[in-house]
Image (cartoon, rainbow, N blue to C red; front, side, top):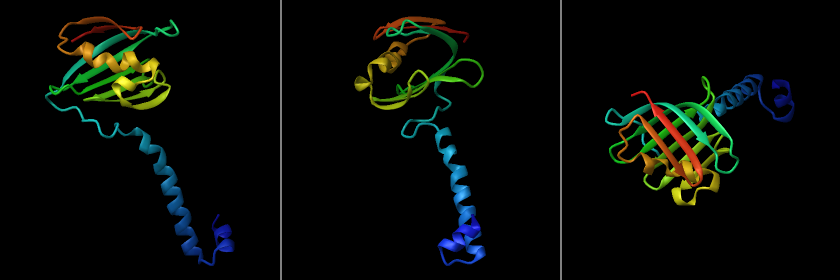
Length: 157
């Protein structure tokens, strides 16, 4: 690679080495940008309420169901976060909501989507409506159907 740079550009061996090192560092850092929390959404704080348990989700579109671990956090101001995963480290859905803005990520989101909650794609409408279903929720179980999708939450706390 260094020899190729020296043939293409009139640079010293040291300059070519620095260019290769810089490109390698930039390439290594690129995948890390996907590991950050969704920008523009608040981070959970000490005053947020947390629910941990299980979720059984049934798609109104496909009729298929999946069961997994769920963690839900909500702030006193109405900010909402959901992490739904099957097995250790296999994210099915991450949902962030602050005000009218929603961001979804994961297999069930078919990648990622962000925008106004009322403009969510049809397969995400139920997910985008979950914060409303949790408003004032204090129980160990929540069974709700939203936009044709069925959600059954069972919490241990």
